[in-house]
Length: 453
Image (cartoon, rainbow, N blue to C red; front, side, top):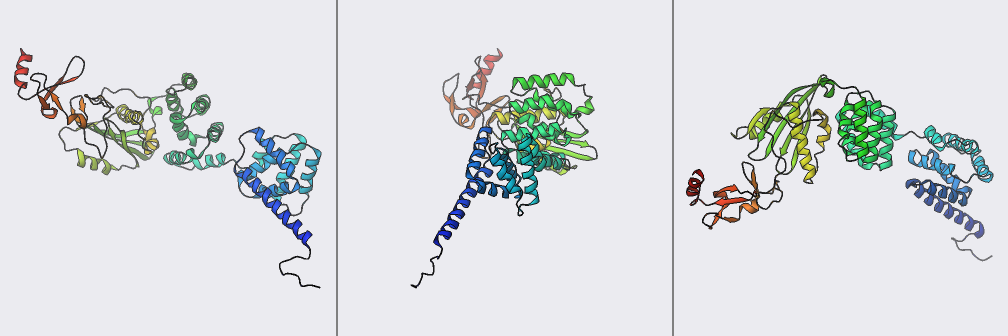
């Protein structure tokens, strides 16, 4: 007998069969893995995948059953969906029954497969099967929120929300509303500011079922939503709710609320502290009324008087800076108007604002207790928005006039003698068309005498 090469097989047909079977299994596993990791978005696609799964034969179902106890809930859920969408015929059900009798099938997989078979035979709903074996992550999330401090709920939600698809976001909010989860009220309030039309309508419709005073505030926020239907639903819901007392509208009591008003440079600093139960909750905001709006905001717990003392040390000694106490409404007006300006000018609202927004009353009105600044300034010469920032030069401010650094460098014509004059050293006034007119130092005394006469 001739020598046989070491890498050859005496049973090439058997080996080839095993190789082809292994390759076929690997190929099916790759296809199923893709389906499980990228779930289809429509029922039509799901049904088509069920037909493809059936066409792949018993091996595909065998591989799919391994995912029923994989520990990855999303994979288990999709595997159940695919099994439920196999073509409704006796041959397919017979294949599933054969798998059910396998001794190597885990208890979890056997229970799920048995329920799928019963559902296919007796018309049980897919959602009932899913709910029986899949723990809804939203339910788990809601349970976690019950143990969190309010501010941590909002901070946690802000991290989770961008990862959610719109349908998942709607599902989560719907579950929280259905379960009347009071721990999710900070989330409802956050969504009232950020929700799209459909989510805003859901909130306006279902929030009144929750018995909590803050529901009034959330519905009030929704009355300013861009969607007309959401606004109308929120207004109708508010009319049907009993009115709140002032103490219910804003829980706790204000410990202190004060401001440093530096209108000469367009800056405001605000400290606002409330006592809620035995705890102190506060915010400190830095506001640029010229351009950026809410530049910075810090949420803090406890008294934290050193934050304010540091601001006084940095800015409070200037004679043009007004130190004043603020009532709740004035503090809310200044901070919220600053937020509007931030959005209007295209800047990002500081994240911490949403952690402490609930410390400020809503709704609010323009206060009479302080001199209210103008938010958002334009250059009086070029009419372009004033821009501020760490690398920008400060605009020229006097009274209610702002001149951007670029225009301030340009010499202007004196309306009396016609010579060019540097505007920072010149007298100016506005004409009937609200345009700036300049007068040089030499012409100023004579012009003033003529004005007095």
